Each structure stands twice: as C-alpha cells, then as structure tokens.
Length: 526
Ligand code: GLY
Ligand code: MN
Ligand code: MN
Image 1 (cartoon, protein in one colour):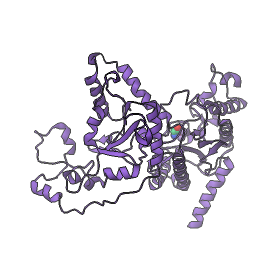
Image 2 (cartoon, rainbow, N blue to C red; image 1 turned 180 degrees about the vertical axis):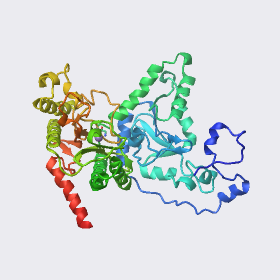
Image 3 (spheres, protein in one colour; image 1 turned 60 degrees about the horizontal axis):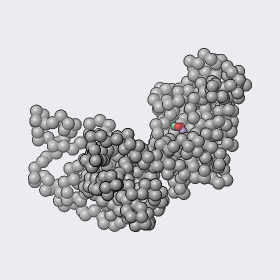
Image 4 (tube, rainbow, N blue to C red; image 1 turned 90 degrees about the vertical axis):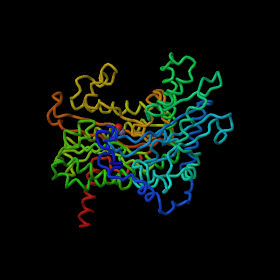
C-alpha cells in the first residue's frame, strides 16, 4: 500500500516523487470532501498519568541542573527509510525516551526542548521548562487524516493528541508547527543577551540544520564559526544524557525485570524449537524465529539482532546471519534480548547442547566460562571499579587456558598489558551497561564507565566466553568448533549484585535438566 496521486504523467513527475508510482488515489474535490466527512468523532477522554512521569521529570531536572541558562534540544529522530516509501519500524532516540518516559514507537519527528528560565521558576522549581513538540493526531475532517500515509489515522491508526500526551506525561506539549521558532528564537551569544543552544546531534538532520543555521545567522563572525567548539558543546549534552542513565531509578529497574522475564520466556521457546531446528536446513533461523515470535508477542521488539549460532558459528562473535544448521552434538550459542514496550532491553546468552547433553570437552570449556562468570560476579561489589569484573573473569580464563596447555606464555605474562595472548580466545569485554540501549550509556566519560565505581542502581552484563575456531591451528583439534558464552544481567544493590537473569539455568547439569524438563512437559502435553 502506498499513497500518492496518479494524475501526472511520468515525464512531468519529479524523480523523487516516483517512489509512489503505484498509487491510484483520486484528487477530485468531490473525493476530498467525501473523504473528510461523516466519520465518528474521536474520543475526548484523557488517559491518566503514566507511572514513569515523575521519574522522567526527575531525570530532566538532573540534566537541567547541569546546563542553566542554555536551551537543550533533544530530538526523537525521523522515521528511517528502508526502501522508497517503506520505513523501518520507528524507535525514538534513547535519550529522548529517557527524558520523556515515552516507549513503543513514540514519536517520529518529535523534539523535547528544555528552555531556560530564571532560577527557581522552571519545572519543579528548576531552571528549565520542558515542552514536547510533536505532530498530534489530526482531526478526522482533515486531509491529513485520510491522505497522509505516514501519519494519518486512516493509514497507520490513531496517534496521540497534545492533550493526551500532556495528561500521560505531565509535560507541556505543542504542535510541531511551532518547533522552528521554539528552537531558533533569541539564539545568540549570552554576552549580548542571546540564548545558547545545545543539541543532541545526528539524530535528526533537519534539526541539526536548523540549529546550524540559527548559530550561523546569529554569530558575530559567521564565516569564522568555531565548529569544533560548537560540536564540543553538543557532545557535552550527549555525554550528560548518557551519564544520567548510569544509575537506574526504581521504574527502570522494574522495566529491566519485565524485559528479562520476557527474554526468559523466549529462551524456553527456543528450547522447544530445537527438535525442529535439528531437522531444518537453516536450523539457526528456526531458533531465531522462535525467539522473535516471543519478543513481539510479549515485548515491543528485539533489543538487538539475535545471535543464534551453532557449532563453529558460535565462535563468530557477531554471527547474526543465522543461516546455519543446528546439529546434534554441537553447541548452540543463543545471545538474545527482548525489548519491553518501554524500550528497555535484556541481553542474555546461554550456550546449550543442541541435543540436550554436553560432551566431555564441551562441558570442560563450559565450566571454565562459568567459573569466569562467577569470578566476575564475586568481583562486582559496590565500591569496586567496573573494570575489575573483566580482570577477575579473564584471569580465570587465562589460568584455565594455561592449565590446558593452550597459552604460549605464563599466566602472568598473558595478563600483563604486554601479553594478552589469552584474548585470542576471549577477545571482547566482559561487561557493559544495559538499559534503553543494549550497550547503554556509551557516551559516558571513561572515568564514570570503565574506570567508574560500581554503584547501587547500575545494571550491567557479565558475559565471559571462550571461542575456539575450526581454523585455529594454535590449539588441538578437539577444542575446535566450540564457542561458549554465558551472559547474565546484573543489578547492583547496596548489598551486592543481584542476577536478574538467574531464572535461566547456568550450571551445565542444570541446563541439561532444564532442557529435559521442557521436553518432558511438551511430551506430557501431547
Ligand atoms: N548482544 C550483544 C552483547 O552481548 O553485547
Ligand atoms: Mn552483552
Ligand atoms: Mn549479548
């Protein structure tokens, strides 16, 4: 389905309009009048306040306090074209979602503006007043209702009104028509009474251009704008939005629990799908599909592309092609996460024996990785540094590799900065922050992230692995084609780490029992 008129012949039709070549929509005034008439009025009932609203207000206040007197511009982003007039499913920028509390597909082209006001007169007595600019639902008597295939209710279903979002979010709302002037009004150097802007860049190129133009037009010496300094201003805002997400509030922790619970269900579905996967030419896709079905049924989406990797494919770190077979006797590495409707995602990996039982060598490698994960878990205490988790986990792996005779140097030499030979088989980091993004808080300063102190409210992964490729001639043949990762989602509390994904078994024998139990239940149901 697409939407455009067919009144022009192709010689006069501009090239960029020809994405809509299939349309048959008439353009007569009679048609327009008929289409805009005789529809039931939309409901005027307003929804209640979202549970997230107060939390989002606190987050905005934390950001506001760092930039008094400056206008902060945080776009959701536009729809992204997949091809011609077909878009990808829309997902807002995570910084926007965090500060508004909006999830699902809310809201293409929207922009949150925190406008500076005199100290104490802003929202909640702060220094900014927030307004959410978006394209509200158009009335059923308008052309947009039936003629706009990207935002009209007739085509894509009802969208929120200004009053609805205001009621749900406790946030002032305004029509996108007022956005340009809201962004550009009074822009200029503070020394001459102007307002300086900070923008989250590279989210919406129209807003980037608007801000660039406003800065250019109001600069004292426009032809010698210090673009580096302006980029640094903007980067500071992105950094702040990342850092404010390092500590999750109570609502976010609840959302992480929702995402993890849905992901656990997805893993159970995958185990159920394995007998079929074992007989299928693209067994990995059977696995991927089983998980995806669950993600869409109970959540919003996948938090990232699923890695469903069997046998040697499990040694390919970013194996998302998932075109391989799944064979009895192989390991299946499944790295998958459901994104909840709130857009928070889990990120869990389990490595399963495809036929339900580990071989001896698989078990040996699996237990080394599990021991490394447990060492990471033991190192994760409030007050220790984030990077200590990686050190603890990889030291265990280096020791194990040495005891198997695989390390070409001593453990001490391998774990020294000059060595690192063990990383041939464990090349990635052990932990990352997790939340709205699978790799959350990515723009935070190193001193707050890798060198940061583990603090109550942080959510992160622990995910060591060992990957022995078929092509690796530095190891005996018996190890080749084995890839193992165990990844859990951890909440730091004042009393220590809590494994949010503990509902999925971790020990080799527990994994085998869990799989057997799922098959027993399935058999009993038949
Ligand atoms: N699934 C991506 C990661 O584990 O970081
Ligand atoms: Mn991860
Ligand atoms: Mn993962």
